[in-house]
Image 1 (cartoon, rainbow, N blue to C red):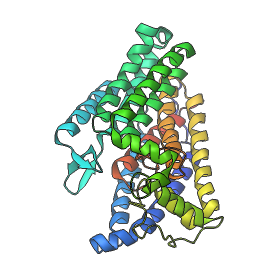
Image 2: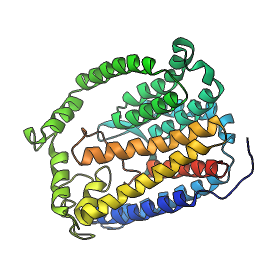
Image 3: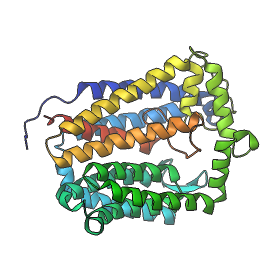
Length: 363
């Protein structure tokens, strides 16, 4: 394995900074009205987002300069800490929007589910790189590998947080499949997983309401379908060029928390089809460069770790944009770098830092 450092991938750095800059501007635009009415400070959410952005960029810089194979040694402790935090949040966590997924630290809070996504990705990358030959075996390879993310998924669903759990499982499946698991095994488990997913939906009335609202949001326009309808009301008037930065109408208490999960709706309303497309192209560019790093990493651990990081980002973007455009049921998941949220932003920038370090050793 080559240990000669080169320069990090400049395209990844530039794209990340562009998305982060757009995100800070859009958080202000989407939150100013609500922040002024609630906290008498139009910059309330923007200032907090800037704090998390500085913390995230500092972490990104540090991770970019720490050789990535160090994380193989810390993968198991990191995973155990993630499990501990997921159990702790069920005991003393703070409930937000019906989900007990926050640990409060003064006026701030962290989401253990965000830590778990990275903890599982690192642990899986380490385990799979050491046991790749076993992955073709169902009982001794695939099942132990799946037990890792399934354990975290179960704890996350107790909160409950289907969005974070979906990203975690999706990332794990992509990593395990890339490591060499058999397609036939995945097909069989996929059918079982689909049955389990249906069971989860049917077991909770609010999830069933979200599915019904997704299929026909106007069947309950003031209840389960309200967010999707208001999101579409934001996207539609945006047209090609948008209403102009700051010109959103839906942020005036029509679309709930427009600076968070549904910030892309405000982007489409204010910046139009062109602005929304530009942001999606930036994400595609970031995904392409991330996959390039994964493919050219000098060892299997680097391959899988880079894949895990970029898969988390890609899956989250697809789900979030799919939700705000009415293609997927509402899951409550943020748009990386754009949505307001400290845990998500800081940890996503941390992951980008690790990805940049892997790029410094890529072939």
